[in-house]
Length: 219
Image (cartoon, rainbow, N blue to C red; front, side, top):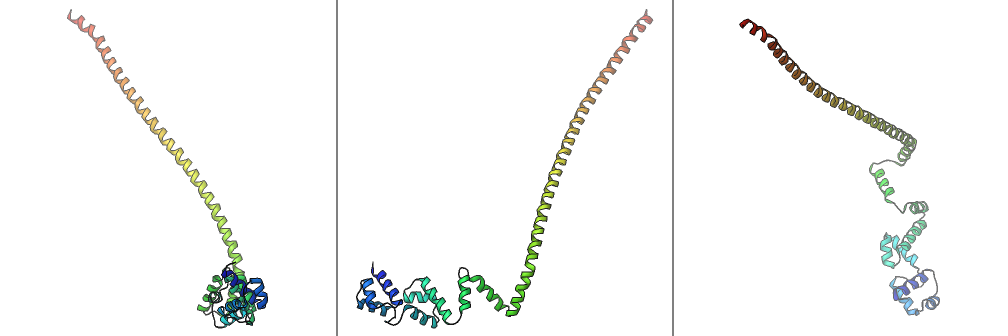
């Protein structure tokens, strides 16, 4: 056990009110050492650390300052702080603090808002009653709107899918018409070519038929 551990042990036993003899035997230190540790912590034989902590809290010291002054753990300083408030008769405050000590700033900020808005205690209670009355309905309405939004979104998605299918079908129809028109133009060109060839053949046949009559007239 090092020096600091012995000092902590001595202070803890002094706090419990144990005698110098018992402390000397358990911590294996001399009475003079116990006295020196006691004086350094601002204690005497009849003054415990808790009493000294209460004196510091009376002087409006913070738990941090008390922990530093008495060289004690933060948890111990907080414990003395709670006990100090209980001694002042602020039992309800201490109970509330124990409940909110993990996140006290939420309640501190709420108290500041109430103070800055100059709202009385009765008005705060009334506002809380109104909130308790309306909030469940607001939550139900929110859930209903959320569900309705989800349903509408699903319907919109369905419409989008159907519209995409229609657009795809229409595009296929347009592409097919373009192909048919191209094929029609090709066929029309072929017909024109055949008609031109037919006309050429007809003209050639007509000339062929007329040729003998001309020869007969010459002879």
